[in-house]
Length: 449
Ligand code: ASP
Ligand code: MG
Image (cartoon, protein in one colour):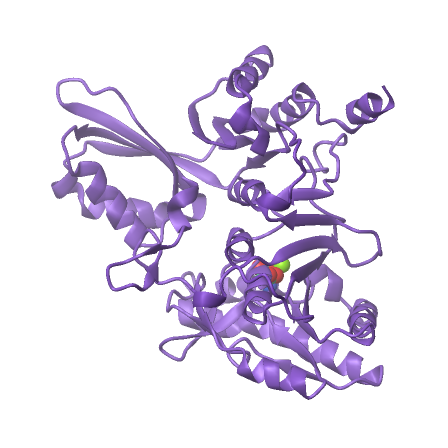
């Protein structure tokens, strides 16, 4: 259900997502066609891992600046800093306070921002680092998974106007209650694209340790191929179905505000993959652009619920209010007015889900809940599916001929996802990649023809 974070407008005119939480709206500037020449560059944790990397990043930023662009650079925490800080917190507390987690984790990005600023200064340029709050990033109050609801770029703009290079600590903001918040794992991407939108930049460059977006995870599919371009709608589906390369929310921002995203390697000069607006796409679209998989989901089945209006609404509204992202949902055929509902959600939300449903047991009148974490989700994504029938049939046939049982299915106009047993996932991804002609050797062969 890709629509779960799509903004809609409530009666008051304020933009909210499906759970009623406010989302950022830039108003009339939305999808501006006239861009400033500001370049927003984002560097991931591996790009700033040590002093040598930091110097390399500083040089890259300076090169862009010297080419005549005002530069805002967003940085992630160095290397495994975030994981180490999380581990440390868990050594001290089983359930660390979320507000304090945000204070703790936001430090990782501040360290990177300060160090890169020092490196730029060593190269003889004027730079300043800002925390997320100083950069004007305003979020809701959902600690550890906050959403950006506003961006006040005045301070960044003033520094740019003074000719300074601006470093911004990614992944963090200031809540409407004046507390430091973080944006969820991988959140620095979102910081960068939101800043690019607010500064009216044409492109947000995301520098990382891979050289672009691939048709499948190259670690399990040696035949995976780098894509030159991909549309926002396809990238949204890829991010939502497990591609780790970009945070979903960052892609949503890019699409809404017309910021192209260039994902590229921080260690080379080769162009990476451009994520571009659909109307800029070549006419002939590939039927399938990629195969993704996710191992982080769990399946929850609520057994023996009364099959009557309002039951599903109650359960899923409660889950949405607790920020639980529910993905696929299926309801079985009911017998004697009793039914089962299964859905998938993040494994890490299982304790919350259990708690919420158990608390509603009297209201929902179900029998029991079963959870299953031994599952995986495999998805096929492609804008060309809209106009080509038979893609689902071919996907199911490929699974069948590899002896893979399909347990749940969900589709959108450009995506088909199946839940299967985890043990089959790698083989299934490779089989689909080959079946849909995505293998690098197959593409080369057909280009030679
Ligand atoms: N440091 C945070 C993380 O590891 C945010 C980021 O890297 O984007 O998730
Ligand atoms: Mg990271």
